[in-house]
Length: 416
Image (cartoon, rainbow, N blue to C red):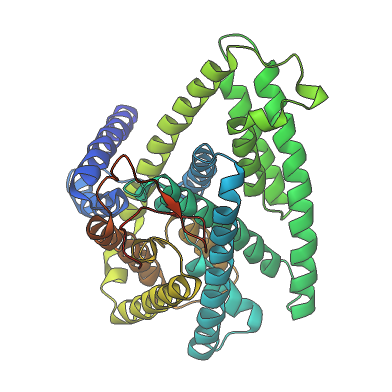
């Protein structure tokens, strides 16, 4: 059994590697192919007498590790500069507006359909309202740099606020005042502790020597994340701040605590750490979505009620997002409208909600259908961008900045 497990894990990684490259070539989001692989793989493995156990524990653990690594990897893509302030502001506002609109509409629908209380309705609604950075960030690779940065900011903020909001509601007494006061208090405390922990991790990276440097750093990062979750905070803020700090260290070189710690080897060290993070993220993400497909019961996907719920959820997500993109006049809005996938964080929060709220079995199928379909919609954004993307600018023309959002609009590029 040990060797079968090793063989299966190795084949999973090789399969995920092939799927990743096929997804880039075909334009189909790799997460879609990974989930389908898991769905098809279950009956095939059962036929061979291979069955995995303990997935109820494995899926949340692997998903959480993947979430940490994906947010860290996304932070490595962001360079903090003055000309990005407007972009970051609009991306954050887009995340907040999308989260609030979807949460309100989904909670209203859940309270009517399932006769739930305010707290129960919010716990069911929030998982479907959060954009998954685990899917959105790697899926936005076809966009230009500023489009990718918009997605990194938006999906990371959506994840962070969604998690903070969810666990605030989960630990509240049910009143609106309690939820609001707890949200503000936990949010400020999360930012403060996140900044302190990010600085501490940065100092560890700068001071640590020897051949083994990154394993203790990642172990500390995971441990701090776990402690933050036990305290019902939002430790993803710490992960995001840490990634931003080490990727933009030039902004902090004037601090006395950092003087003398930077040397000519830092850029090499940072490149090695980024490479390791990318490799680990790929492995964990591949495992998670294949196992998620394997873990899903086929009968749940065949439930007509699950399909009805999924259609309603998807309609709310994309109609509200399209309205906001047009109202705010977001550059690249025609493509960005379709990059709002639900994924890893949706599954993790839904599993937590099920421990508190009794829900019909059709909701299990609806979650995977929403994850699957919303990831597939990214392909629509890719197609629209391929039609919208302008040809290379002549040498005498320069890129103009979109006044509303800071997203680049090249000369001759028609308005959305």
